[in-house]
Length: 305
Image (tube, rainbow, N blue to C red; front, side, top):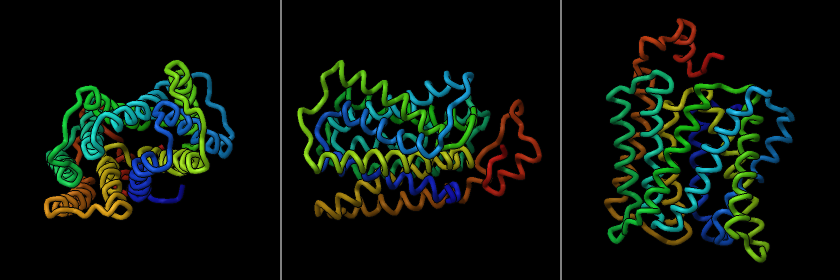
């Protein structure tokens, strides 16, 4: 990956925004099956490119990361998408950046500044204005699933930054997907959530989800997290629901209201503000004080290995 961390994270988040329209227009309505195919189909090209095997001492971490970043996230995301209106599900997903900022304190020793929390909070408010509908209803199971998905991927991304990686970012991402694919395949088989047949449009949709929305997007995201840290790239996740909203407007003729247009402006403003305050957004706890080299390296946007 040659993109700088923030553009890479933004591109990944935009690709994830295509998940909703591809799922509703091209895929069979079998959430566990789709999640399993997404994980396995995303893993294969990454593993073929990486051609590496994790060391034995890393297998426990790979299982934890694969379960959090892929298996739980994919499964809970599809449950939420089925039980909640799309706008509601996207709004809860937008809480992921806030979870990442807060998890960086106990996991990485980084205390979020007020400016960073304000930037993320404004972004969440803007996303809510864009995607929430007046007739949205709450489903407790759907809400729990949406919150669980956001928390799962936030925790997994934070652990990637804490633990580093044993080899290439492609290898780490691919093995996480492979672990998740096995777990989700077992769940799909046990639940009988497998379609009886697949059409050409279904196969094309599965390929898009697996290769572009999953393999490419997750490789970009984990590369950005590894380089800049989870808190620095966290605001980029707000582009996911914003992209989903834009695709609805383009392909379904849904035009934004004045309130939604204001929400778009707030989201963009929060992203720009978050990047502006990022260099001074965190005070590091004394027992995790960085070295002089780490401080100098962070100022250039590249993490020290």
